[in-house]
Length: 441
Ligand code: UDX
Image: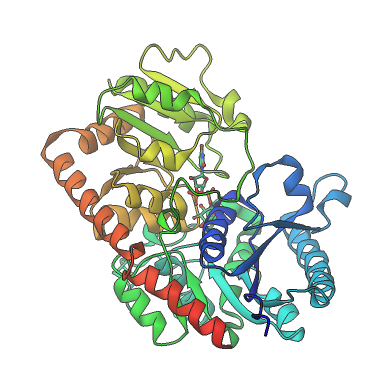
């Protein structure tokens, strides 16, 4: 009798770098466990991307209607069109796939697209949302949805929510940058909890020892599985599917880092979306110049014209448009990470034991920065944006007694992160347990 084919899993990330990276890492891991996995990527994105597609995780294209849009679109109009077109095309994709030799059994979709569950369920698929933000931030959006917390936040001293440390208003997710669209963003993030009770599994890119109380609190409500840090889920040398939405990686980084002493370089990056103000960028530039440390600074092409005119990098600095961030963070020369504290960057710093100077910009980053400084004690938060402060924060993390303690804690956390994904660790066991359950369904 012929053996039955392995279950086929469709993975649908939200089309942004910070959502694609953890979803792809998870997809690669599932494929390494002999599942059949297809990643669905929106058509217009792929035109801009550098894709390396392994045969074990093929990419299928699916349109969200972006290619037909002329002129600019408001955020509200974008979300409406995105949902309408993508859900129709997802339905068509699943219908066509049904008659293939390996029809899909499960849809893993980004939690900001809860409507994907309705599409998949109606076609008999199992469904599992994938949360790309921390459990802490996700819990806060749950409370915002259920009235445990109100937005706009009231000016109270502290907000104490179940399983979370008491938070000041400045530590709560910040939506003010989005001005007129803040209610739309709020709804998008609160709606992640719309239909969770119907999910078969719920994946979080975190690990139990990092957010233990929150994970335990959530696990009492939903079938959640912590599977992170996804950046450590796969062996580096294997052939993985990766997608880079920005300029090809800058090979000179490794060479430049190789020429530097151990723990001597400050790595600076604000992820794939955040856009700094002109004066913030200028202060950062002069702060780095004042810090007397070597620095490697990622300035995306869209940000480059904000660099102060005539800013001289000298011998100490290298500015690149994009790099292999996990590769940089794992390099022995890197001493600290000046980061916006996007959740992937935070997990990548944690996973590589690099202490952080947190310069949060918006949404989950303010809460992530609070955890970096006060809960895990692996970094400091920069409160102002003057050049003297950036230089002082860097020195506080790279040098002195406090710095030594932060670095020690960062190493401890790295050990816990590695243990979570190694054989028998919580995240590794959760992935295995999920695969076994899927095989039985
Ligand atoms: C955003 C949110 O900030 C984040 O919290 C949410 O979970 C996903 O969407 P982003 O702002 O881009 O993401 O930050 P981050 O989550 O840190 O993701 C950026 C990713 O780009 C990281 O995986 C990082 O390794 C990668 N990166 C960044 C590079 O590969 N090269 C670079 O030069 C810079």
